[in-house]
Length: 402
Image (spheres, rainbow, N blue to C red):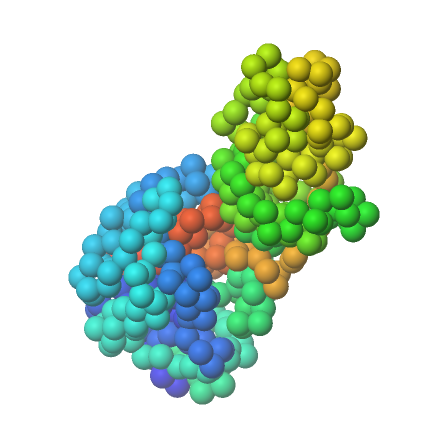
C-alpha cells in the first residue's frame, strides 16, 4: 500500500491546480484520473484557446443555493493571481469581451502550464486509473482501492463530478461519493446550454437561422432573476449564442423568457419620428433599426404591410410593432442537455463544506472542489476562476500545519 499526504481524484482544471500547489507546499501528492487524455475540457474550451479567467470576476457572477460561500476562496485567489502565473510561464493572451481572457495560441498551453506546476511539486500522476472504493481508514485518513493498487492517503480531494459533455469523460463519481458520505446534493442541471422550442412554436422563426444580434434577455423573479445584454443567435431549432447560454443557468422548466430585440433603441419613438419625417416604406425604415431579415419577418408575423409609406401607417400599428419587438415573450420546451452544456449547475451542497478549505463538515479530511460543488459561474471565464480559487483554498488548507 502506497502512502500519500493528499490524493486528488480528477485531473481537470481544479484537480491539476490543486495538486500542483499542494505538492509545491511540501505534500506528497497523488493525482488520479479515469480518462485516457488529460484535461479535455480545458483543451476544447474557448474554441481551443481557453477562456482561462475573467478580469472582472466577483461573487456576483456566481450562482449557488448558498451564494456567499464562494466569497472566501475568490477573495484569496483572484484573477490577477492566475494572470501572473500565466505570465510567468510566458503564455501570450488577449482580452476579447467584458474581461474575458483567452490564450493567443492554444488551450494546450494552459494544460502544459498546469502539468509543469505539478511536476515542480513532485506530483505522482496515475492516468488512466479508476477508483473502485474509498473508505475512512481505522488509523485515520482514507484507504483507496484503485485499478493500480491500494493507497493510504491522509486527505482526499474530489475534483470530479461535473456531468457536462459526457463524450469527453464526464462522470458522476464525485456526486455518488458525496451522497454515500451523507452529503446533500443540489439537483444537477445543464447550464450554459442552448435552449430548444417546440417545432410548431419555432416554425415561424426557423428561417432566421444564422441571424445574430445584441439583445437584452431576462427570466425569473426577485433574487432568482437573470438579466443579460449579450448577442443572440437564431438557429433552426431555437436560440443560442452568449445571451441564451447566460440565461440558461437561471431558466427552469416552464418559465418564459423576455427579450428586448432592440435594447439600445426606443423603437416607439423612432417609428413615430419616421412617420413624420420619412415617406419611405415601413419595411425599409424598420430595416434601418434592426437586421433586415428580422425586420421583414416581424412585419410578416404581425401581418402588417411592409410596402406601406410611413405617413400612412397607423399609430397603433407602429406601437404594436415596437412593443412586440421590445417585449417578446416565449417559452422554451427544454435545452440541448448535458451533451451541449458547458458546465453543471448544482452539485454538493456548500452548506456542508468549509468555505475556507472546501473540507467536508461530515467527513474530516475529505474535500470537494471545482464543478462538483454547487457554485456555477456565468459564461466568460468565471467557471475556470472558481476552479483555480477553490483549488488554491483547498491545497493551502491541506498543507497548513495541523
